[in-house]
Amino acid sequence: MTSRVRIAPSPTGPLHIGTARTALFNFLHARHVGGTFILRLEDTDVVRSTVEFERDILDGLRWLGLDWDEGPEVAGEPARGPHAPYRQMERLPLYAAAAERLLGDDMAYPCYCTPDLLDADRKAQEAAKEAPRYVGRCAHLTPDERLAREADGLRGALRFRVGEGIVAFDDIVRGHVEIDVRNLGGDFIIVRADGTPLYHFTVVVDDAAMGITEVIRGEDHLSNTPKHILLFRALGHDVPRFAHLPLILNPDRTKMSKRKSQTAIDDYIAQGFIREALVNYLALLGWSTGTEEEILSLDAIVERFDIGAVHKGGAVFDRERLEWLNGQWIRRLPADDLIDRLRPFVEADVAAARIEWMPSDDELRSLLPVIQERLPTLGAVGDLVGFLWVRDVDVDAAMLVPKRWDVATTVEGISAARDTIESVGDVAFEAEELEPPLRALAEARGWKAGDLFMAVRVAVTGRTATPPLFDTLVALGRDRVIERLDRALSVLTS
RNA sequence: GCCCCCAUCGUCUAGAGGCCUAGGACGCCACCCUUUCAAGGUGGAGAUCAGGGGUUCGAAUCCCCUUGGGGGCACCA
Image (cartoon, rainbow, N blue to C red; front, side, top):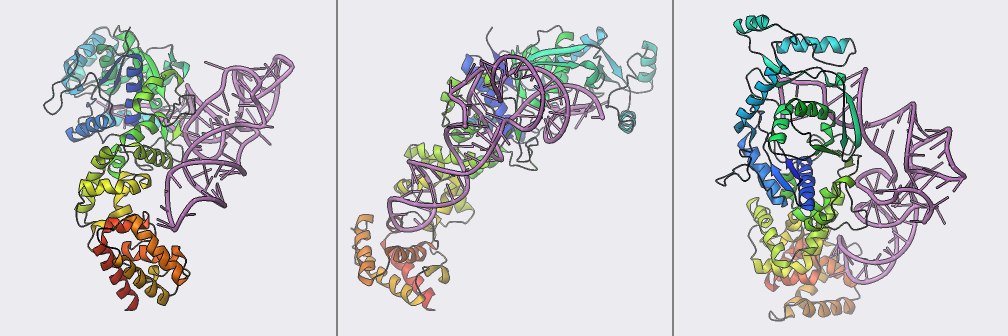
């Protein structure tokens, strides 16, 4: 049987790191075994679901390169796959029919308990140090009793009878798991009083309808799995196999959350993390090749992936390691590709007035040799060479003076460097032409070259850490270098 | 509270009874390279494999208990 897996996000927030990781593992498994990767939107929480979040999630998955084989229609694109629609609120009749069947078979029943009543039950159980569970007040109402409540205008929610016994399954990553249905919290609601279906119900109806063979999802669903298995059986469907992935954790080892970590993929994209790095990093959270390889492309991961080799323990999200991987991947990008990816970040710097104009692609290309290996993220470009794209830089008088120098020496040094640089012709304004005379200058005056270079560096960039000085001077151009050196001199002498 | 799951350097991990005086990577430290910063190279610190019992000639690897951590117990997903 060919494998069918799915990612079923809920459009109640922007694409979350955890969702992306689950999607990735589903994708990897599907591609590795030549199966089908399905995208289904679980939008039954009508209050919190929005089309904007839906859009965000789809865009994010696509950005990561996780293309789905079957999924909903979006922005004019028709739905793909034989099981459309792929948006749960458009599949309501299916759930209604399934609910009808369960009701008819008395495997489910209407419950008229009010939220307040349920709440009171829960509080009482809590006070008695008992596990919260539905007490079964409506489990055995006679038809007359039901009619009476309906006549009173009450509308029942539908509860599924969990019965008794032990539910066992063999999880692909966790192995054999057994849970006594007594610990499920009693009969659970599958359809709200307003007629809209709930997650535990829709997920089963749809996984069955769509022929899902492996349910690959987060470990937080492990305890819910028996409910799903019971439902699959009650509906007369085959039970799929399950693979519960270890959770991604905050530094304090709790489930990764917005409160304690950055969880939105958007934020990582906005900071200049690239898809190759994110995918590579996420794949290595909870899985490894078993070898010492770790810089892996999506294709390479697909080739090596084995859902059965996924770990059981949760993994702390380590941003430092992600940044390192990002740098590794940035260094591997072809020039044109890197320029294309850099451009939006430079544009954003212009928009935010961090720099004053947009450099040309050619200018960016000429900078690549010195910035490519220095970028931890694409967003760091302005920080690295933003001084090139502003009219003037702010220079701090104190910073201009090298540690071993005093103000007088600095004035002398910058002034002499200015004249030396000016004497290098415009046409010969190359790094190889600038370095020798400046070194000779330092030697003639008995200065350490590094001190002279540092003074010039700060004078023309306003900072102490920059790409190599001579490349920086060339990038600025002769006139601007002279201008900035003069300006630095006036700062020092004023 | 009840149920379930998990447990190797700070972090991500290798390890499927002898190859482990536990390997790699991130981070950290030092040195090299070097005009600064990175990148790169070399080296180092860092885990008595949570603890305790077994099983075995032999255990990080198998079993049990304890401890610790996490997740789940909604008319959320």
